[in-house]
Every structure is written in structure tokens, then in C-alpha cells.
Length: 479
Picture (cartoon, rainbow, N blue to C red):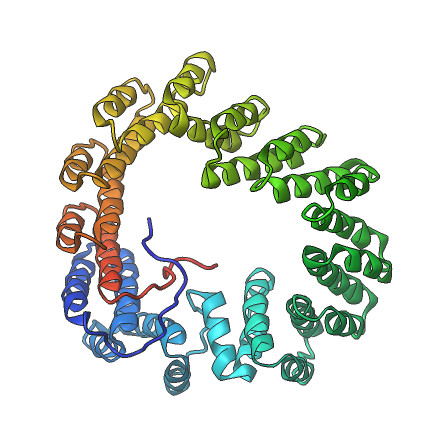
């Protein structure tokens, strides 16, 4: 459960509402220090100090000094992780004084981008520290921030910083720069990709560049395609070009896709279906049915259902029914489609629950959550028909949260009555966050009903951030 997204407010000083936030953080820290398990105590403390540093950096650093000695180092690193996002220059200064290199940073993407804005060389070295998976995240973030400042300076900077022991690090970083530059200057991006010393790297970078170009100008991408020498890379870029044509020339996109074979054809059709989902869902559905490979078809079906759920066109329920009929062996697509149906036509969704073996409880859960907002008694009746205890408990949690949006007191009572502690706590935490903007005092009171120490402390931290109007990545999330 999270009330937050990516950091947007970058002010480092305490805001006027810090007076509201700080007591919540002190309460959360007290919860952390009372945890019986040492590992849990350290984890919760790190969460609190991280949040505290986002609200009041000086106060957080003072609190770190008052912690037991075995917790101080991890807590200091948590504070620096937050500062890397909110006050990067100060974070770098403090890290230099303490020997911390952000190797344990909780948010690679945000920290990499922040470093790139104030210390580009440090940002490149930051990318080079990571293993393959994490480096890919850091590369995208740092490349985006460096190119935003100055593409030529960004290229020169990375070219001047090789890693002799791991030369692929620099090649990856240059490839990422080329991919970002392709959004605004395809010629420069192609030139950079072609400057890479190894043919395999050149083809890979060109593939990424041309895929980006295809989003904006598929005709140009088609002209650039022969520059890729590796036929296997070119083979998987072609579907991206077909997908690009879907927005401006659907007949051409379909001709191109259907001239391909096997998985390449299915990849292209899946991309075209996705492009049409928001504006022409019925056409997207028709194309989806032409996909032969079950994996690509399931992916296309799921994406279509997701877009339909977000946009809610007039015929959403009928589209969802057809998606459900063809969902086959991919339950997430089926559940998402049935959730759409539940919102538009609960009775029709319940009919499927009765007639589809093995899906009844999941469908009833989706229907119950939809009904919870306006028809709580009926929602509870539907939830009562769920035989699986875990699913029933989750449904009750969803009902409580939905109901709290229109009647907070009733929603809180429903949540408090849930038997399973895990689901009860999850419902209370979600309701607390939902209420924070309009009923802050009630949100705080609700958070104090949470039995689990870690979740109660986390929720108090999130409410503290709400109090000062700041959003931060969770310290257990790596984008």
C-alpha cells in the first residue's frame, strides 16, 4: 500500500505544516524502537528516518545521533538516500564526509537523475557501480537528465569516462544517451549509435534508436532500418515500425504486420492492437483475435482490458465480455475484464461467476468491491458467498475501502470488523491514506488502529509526507 509516487517537490527546508508531520514521525520512531525483533526494529527505523529527512533534514540528522549506536549507520544512510532526492548537493557533501557512496540507495532512478543535475561526473560513476539490472535503471535516468542539460556535453562527458575493466559500461551508457537523444534529434542519435566501436553494440543501439523514431515518424524509421546489419535485431525492430504506422496509416501497419511471419507477425499485431486500444477498442479487439501466439495474444488482451478499464467507453462491458471469452489460460486478463464488467453490469459478472468453474470466488470479490461504494449491504451479501477465506477477507477489505470514500465512519467500521489481521490492517492503512486529503485527523486516528507495528509506522510516515505536501519513492521500492 502506498500513498506516494515519484518525488516532485524538491524543497529541502521544513514546510509550514512540518509542525503537523513531526509528531507523527516521533510516534512512528517510538513504534520502531519498541519492535521486539532487531531486524524489524532496524527496518522500521530506516523507513522513519528516510521520511523524516524528506520533511526536515536537520531534524532527521539530529534524531540519528540519538539512536542506539548499532542503528546509527543504517539510519544515516537512509537520511542520505532521502537527501539525494530532495537536496542532492547537500547529500553529496555529507556522503563525502561519511564515506557513503549511495551504493545502497533505495531509489536508483531518482538518485541517478538528481546526481546528474548537480554533479554529472558523479552520476556517470554512479551508473558504473551497479550490476546489469540496476545499471539499466540508472542509465535511463542519468541519460535523460544529462541530455536535458546539454546533449553534446553529455556525450563528451561519457566518452571521457571509460571503465577499462568493464568497457561495456561506457558502451551501454552511450547507447542510453542515443536512445534519449532520438526523441528530439534522430540524426544525432543515429550518428552516436554508429560511432560505437563494436558492431554488436552499434546494431543494438541503432535498434533502440530506430524503435524510438518509429513512435514519432515510422516512415523515417523504415528508411533507417537497413543500417542495422544484424538481421535478428532488425527482425524485432520491424514490428515497432508497424506499430508506429498504426496511429497514422492503419492499412499500411496491418499490411506490414501480415507480411511478417510467426512470432514477428504476432509481436507486430500485438503492438498495433495496443496502439488502437484507447481510440478504437473494437478494432483493437478484432486485431487481437488474429494473434496466433498465446503469449502475445494474452499480453494484447491484458493491455486492451487495462485501457478499457481506464477509459470506460460506453461499450466497455461488452468489450470486456469478449476479452473474457478469449482470455484462455491467462487469469490476470480474465480477472481484469470481469472487473470492468462488474462496474458496468454486476449481475452479468455474477452470472459468469456461477457458470465458470474455479472463478466464482474471484468474480464475486471483484463485484463486491465495485458494489461496496454505493450498495454496501449487497456487497457484503456477495462477499458472504465467497467460499475461499483468503479471497473473502480481501473482498471485505475492498468493500471497506470503497465504502470509506463516501462514508468514512462506515468504511472504518467495516474494516475494523475484518477477522484476518493482515487484511484488516491493509484495509485500515489504505483508508487512512485515502482520507488524508480531506479528513486528516480521522486518517491519523485510523492509522493508530493498525495492529502491525511496521505497517502502522509506515502509514504514519506516509501521513507525515501528506502533511507537508511532499511525495517520495518508498524506501523499499526500486523503480
